[in-house]
Length: 120
Image (cartoon, rainbow, N blue to C red):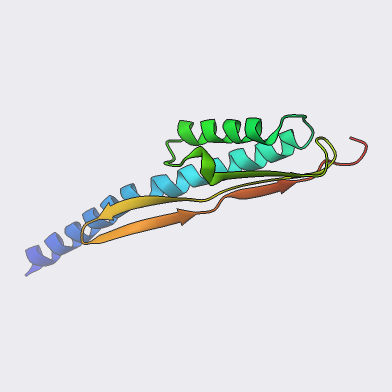
């Protein structure tokens, strides 16, 4: 009886570790991607780069982080002129995780909006 409880406890711990190994990396990659989008929004709010150039830069970062997305899933919108208006960047993507008996789709929606400081 004691051995059975030990085996069940070890099995539960092993399953928990397996689930963590499958689930944590997509959330960590999304955290890094969100940070990259925020940094890019702040930097590009002051630049003269067009929306396509900014989208391309964000897409390269997604590829570096091995995030499965297409460039079309990234929205870059400049409201007002370059260097003086608001820059909004967003992306929507889904990562499929195959857990035993429970396939899971994790949906992520990182975004950022930045406006340059007047006179800066």
